[in-house]
Length: 245
Image 1: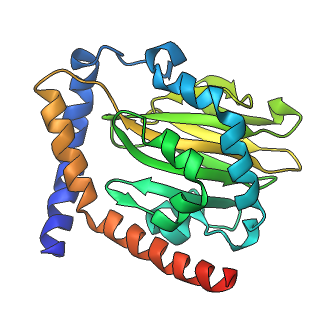
Image 2 (image 1 turned 180 degrees about the horizontal axis):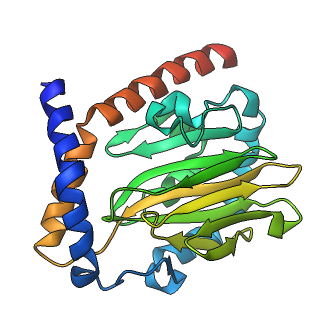
């Protein structure tokens, strides 16, 4: 069954996703922008208003930075853009999977995440000093990427993201919202960690494309990619729990 799902997903990724992406600008009120305004996602204001609450929970997590999993420890297909110990993660949700123990350690952050309509993926994204994420692009036009900046070291201009030919900078307590299917890369050319609350949300779409988007989310949720990530996350949780005893 898993081989059948894997084969189906690969075919969909190759043939359906490009055609789906072409239709998104037609069926989405957001159009085909690179960046989006916070006003287009009203729930983001609540996260900004509570960013210091989230930051307090993050600070407790950061006490164990060295033991947190690297991105590719959880999601091996990210090895090309991670592949070292300089991109740490602390997962809350991932396409139907909840890291309950991580959520329990950050209850206020979890409550806020649960208010986000169409939330599909959420984690603390922690970049070590000197980390460069090479250019890459997402394949699913049906999600919008959201960053809430929680820890941005100085000089702020040395911590940046390039999307196509545009450069953006994070500001603590503020949202950065964009379409990750455009080519982008990230730098943390500072001497401290940069951390954002990283969230993927379902892109608002009209029927019938909204139905197709829902089908894609379902296929992702049952895919070997998510199954592997879930297993890796659970293994890390067991090790971390043993360390905490």
